Amino acid sequence: MSVSRRSLLKNAGIFGASAAVTGPTMAMSSKPAVDPLAEKVIVDFGHGVASGDPLSDRVILWTRISPQINAETEVTWRICEDVEMQQEVNSGTVKTDSSRDFTVKVDADGLLPNTWYYYQFSAGDKKSVIGRTKTAAETGLDRLRLAVVSCSSFPHGYFNVYRILSERNDLDAVVHLGDYIYEYGVGEYGDKSLELQRDLLPKHEIVNLTDYRQRHNLYKRDPDLQAVHQQYPFIVTWDDHEFANDTWKEGAGNHSDNEGDFLVRKAKAKQAYFEWMPIRNQPEDLGSLYRKLPFGNLVDLLMLDTRVEGRDEQPSGLYAQQIRHDENRTLMGFEQEAWLHNQLKSSTAKWKVLGQQVQIQQLGPVALPDRLGGGISFFLDTWDGYTATRKRLFNFIDDNNIDNMVVLTGDIHSTWVADLAHDPFDKRYYNGDTGEGSLAVEFVTPSVSSPALPPVIGDIAAAALKSSSPHLKHCDMVHNGFFILDVTEERAQADWFFVKTVKEKSTEHNHAISYKTNDQANRLTKAIAPAIARPNTASLAPLESDAISA
Ligand SMILES: [Fe+2]
View (tube, rainbow, N blue to C red):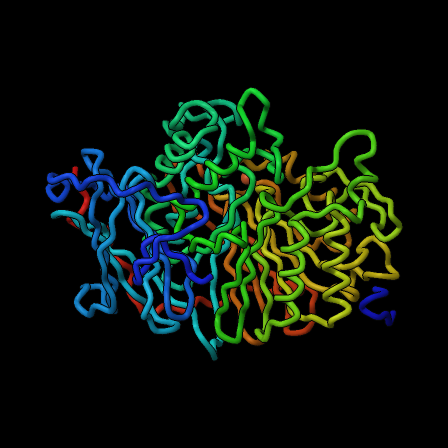
């Protein structure tokens, strides 16, 4: 059947190399009097190091110190070409204090494109471990390999995924699609923290600034999380649990009036996030973290916030199935929608990759065509709850003949591989056998450690969804893991890997399945094998250093 496609910051580092001290979420306190003992304070770099948001000439470097007294403390940073830290490219000294929870963030510039670097912090006579990072290509990139992860609940299991990634030396960066932390108190999420001895701090649900900081602090103490941060730059976005379950712009499913004003809670969660994550602070007028990270001519990575700043409330109640089609509702705010459309149209990169939170594909088991203004979906926290936003995006890429859009998704603790079409349930608009009518593709990553479904139940559910969803090429609801996105001029391929367990420390894992989309095909093809790893030229950073005090 032949059918038409239609019918079918300015870089605002907190302590930049240029000493910029800005940021929408971090009000800097007035400078405290310098404690004469400060330079002699013994500090601890026990939260490791991290880097993130690589551009062609700069990258965010992050650490956190744990001084023994509450005093402003100087931290020196260096970035070098070599792991021996001899060939220095840039360095500086910054100060941190309790106003930012003793975190340190540097936007280290003056770097070369598509180049590996090593970096290290020091304070007093203590040094951090050496971290490794890489800048983005400016032009002419022929291949990009990204690990894609989401949903890392601390009490539910060990971060074996992070350890596995830290030991690979064939990636360029790690994309984390959110639920990096969870807000729940002990036992509130069906967790078995006592069994695994991965006890939460604080023990109660996190609500205020102190709580959110303490939870980030706990996570960043995890050695497997530290290991992957040490080796690769991260590109992150938040999902709901960095705030509270089922967040929208003015509330959350897991927020009640007796927990205070949600907007205050949101602001405090956001402040802690920007303190503790290796993300470049955004200009204040942007109001969110959506941003573009270009990788040469090959990939424009568009990181979205479909969760917090612009999202209308999830449909609920008797009229939920009508509300979800309301043209006046938006998943990400109309400003961000316009920004996304503009980025897609103006991009000169071969691939337009969206890093975002919730599933964009139409979800069964009973889903009638959106275009008829009807249909039933039980997944109203996803794009199914905001069909007008999806329709506007799909119409836009169709009307403008935008090829090679690949959507990366987290949130759902399972693996989904789907073609994206106007109406995948109607053969006039989409052919499930050939993929004809598909506009783009979606790759959904399983969770690092957050709960999936038990084997029998998960397998039955996945089979039912696949049989009723012509666009859903693969679904696994049982396993924890990750995928590697390997992009060349010819195709964008995702290789899923599942870990054997999260209940004990283990790096056992196996390749599960691979799918790709070929240049200008805009539909999925099963790949017979994972992309052949490409060893990096730079050695891994050494795991140990003499830096961390006992
Ligand atoms: Fe999650």
